[in-house]
Image (cartoon, rainbow, N blue to C red; front, side):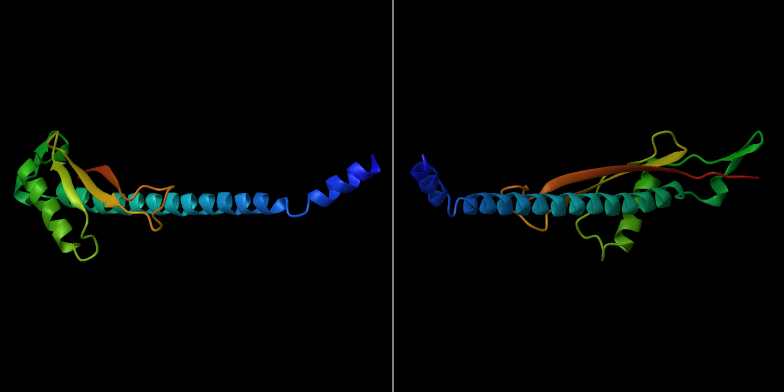
Length: 149
């Protein structure tokens, strides 16, 4: 029995090497996926910021002469073509920063607010087995001009 224990104890040298390598691979995979998820989140927030600015530009795509009074409220009817033109102009002004942003949809659905949908392609900072090469993302923002008076 003593000989068996001594032989088993001698055979266990180096058995933690595979466990260490496996833990390192798992740790690297978690780090790569976390970096990718953070990058995707930041890209989506950046696209939302651009869409908010574009929707605001679209919501203000009217002339002051088009503002009219209905009862005790001031209202304006937005034209979808004017909203789309204002959104395009806004994105052209910021094109130096956002080359990959495209307009999917820019219009006024109800005549009072501007709805803008922007799209982009996210590319992870580290491409590998754990992350895809590119992911298309789209965001939608709605803005409305509110008058007080």
